[in-house]
Amino acid sequence: MEGKNELKIKSLWKDYSKEIFAGKGDSLVDVLHKIPLFNKLNKHELKIVSKFAYERSYEPEEFVFQAGQPGAAMFMIKEGEISIVKKNNENEFVEIARLKEGEVFGELALLDSSPRSAGALALTHVKAIAIFREDLNNLLETHPDIGGRIMQYLAIITGKRLKETTNLLIQLEDKLTKLKENCNEG
Amino acid sequence: MRDKDRQNRSRVFYFVLFLFFLTVFGYLLVALSNLILPVVLGTLAAYISLPAVNYLRRKGLPKGIAILILLGIFSFIIFVIGEKIISFIPSEEESLELRVQLQYKLNENFLDFLGKKDFKSEGNIIDNLIGKELYPIFKTVNSFLALDDKEKKIFKHYADSIKIPQRVLFFFNENQKHPFEALVSKNNKDSANSKILSAVPDVTYHSKIAVFLKAISNWIILPFVFIFVLIDEGEIKNFLLSIVPNRYFEMVFTTISNVDKAIGNYLRGTILQSTLVGMTIFIGLLLIGFNIQAAILIGIIAGISNAIPFLGPIIGLLTGLLYALIVEGIDPLLPFLPDNPVVGVIIVVVIAQLLDNALFQPLVLGKAVNLHPLVVVIGVTGGSIIAGFWGMLFAIPTIVIFKVVIANLYKQAKEYFIIY
Image (cartoon, rainbow over all chains, first blue to last red):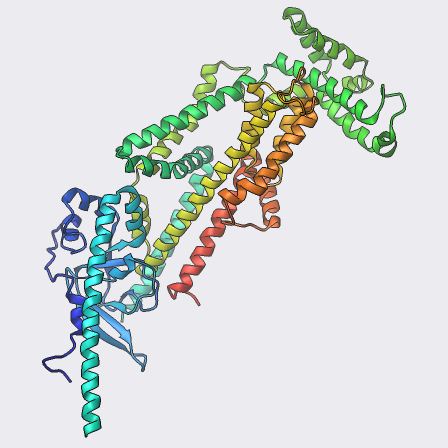
C-alpha cells in the first residue's frame, strides 16, 4: 500500500542522475558533460573521455543487458526510454524503474565485474552511450589525474547511494516492526 | 516482437557481406603476402612499446614525442644489429676461405674424436663402436664443404691476389690430401657456395644502394604501422565494435580487452626472456675468450632463436659451435674455464638454458600461457613447413594468440548467456 512514507524505490535510480533533456544536436562532449560523473571535467578532459565512449542504438523490446550478466560498462541514455526490469517468482519481468534521456544506469560496472542485479530493456528506439570499466582503468594509466578524479566522483556517488539505501532499509525495518506489533495486538 | 522478415533479411545481408569481405581479405592476403611480415613486426613492436609510451606520457611527454623517441630507439637497435649481421656475411671468396677452415677443423676434430692419426689408422673404442655409422654423415658434411674444381681455381687466384693467412693455405693443402676430396670433385655438381649464398641476401653481388632500395620497398611500411598503431586512441576498436550486434557488444569488448592484455604480456615477456638468454650467452662467450663481435652476433642469433621452443636452443648451440670450430687463439678470461672453444660453447649454452628454465621463464612468463609439449612440437614443425625460419619463430605466439582468443570467447559467451 502506498502512503506518505512510501518507499521510493524508483528514487534509488533517479536521485543521483539528472533528468536533463539531451538535445539531438549535442556533440558527444556536451552529452558527457551532463553526466554527474563527468560534469566537473573541463572540455579538453571530456574530449579525452569521449574517445572511449561508444554510441549504440537499440530497438524497442531489445535488452541493453540482462540480469546476471557480468557488468562491463555504464550506459547513458541519449535518446529514448529504458525500463529496469527484474524477474519475479513467476519468471515474469517486473519493472523496477523507468529511465529517460540524460539518465545513467549500470554505473556500478565501472567498479567491478559483478553480475548485473537487474536487466535494462529498451521501451522505444534508444540511443545510448557506453563507457567501459577497462577503458577507465587504462585512463588511470595514461591520464592518472583525469582517471583518478572520475573514480573519486564515482566513489562519492556510490557512497551517497549506499547511505540512501541504508536509510530506506531502516525505514522498511521500522515499518515491518510496526506491522508485526499491530498484528500481535490484533 | 521484432519483424521476422526484417530479421531474416538482416541475416542474409550480413552473411553475404561477410562472404564478400572474406573473399576480398583472402585475395589481399595472397596478393600482398610480402607485406605480412613487416605489418606483423610493426604491430608487435607497437604492442611491446605500449607500456613505455604510457610511462613517458605519465612523465608529461606528449604522445607524439613519446612515439618518435621509441621509434628512434627501435631504429637504432635494428641498425646496429643489421650492421653487425651484414658485416659478418662473407663475400664469395671469404665464403670459400670459411669452408676451407671449416672442412679442416671438422676433419681434425672428427679424427681426434675417434682417436685416429689419419683415416687409415686404427681408432679408439668409439671408432670401433660407432665409427662406421658416423662415417657416412661425416662424408656428407664434407662433400658439402669441399671445393669443386672451379671453386679451387677461384680460391687459388684469391690466395695469390690477397695475403690470406698461411694457416688457411695450410688447411687448403691438407684438405687436398683428404681421401674425400677425390669423391667430392666428381660428385659435387651443385656448388655448395651457391647454396650457402642463396640463403643470405645478395649483398655480395649487388651494390649496397640496390640492396637498400629493395629492402625499403616492402619494409618501409613497418615504421608507419608502428606509429599508427600507437597513435590510435581506440579508433580501431571503436570501428570493430560498431559492426558487432548489440547482443554481443559487451561480450566482444570484454574478450578484446582480455585478449589484448594477455597477448601483450606474453609478447613482452617472450621478448624479455629472449633478451636475457641472448645477454647470458653473450657474457658467457666473452668469458670463454670469444672476441666481442662474434659474441654479440652469436648472442643475438641465440636470443632470437630462443623464442622457438626445443629447436631454438639447438640453433643457438650450432651457431656457437660453428664459430668455435674455426676460431683460434682463444684465451678464457678466467683460469678455470676450458681452453677448448667447443667445450666452452657447450657449457655456456647449457648454463644459459638452465637459467632460462629455472629463472627467466618463471619470473617473466610465469604460467601465463601454458602449452602442451605436443602442441609445441606440432606447431613448430608446421610453422617450418609453412614459412621456414619465420614460421618456426611465429608458430608458438600464433598458437598462443588463438588459444587466448578461443578460451576468452568461450568463457564470455557462457557468462553473457550466448551459449550453454
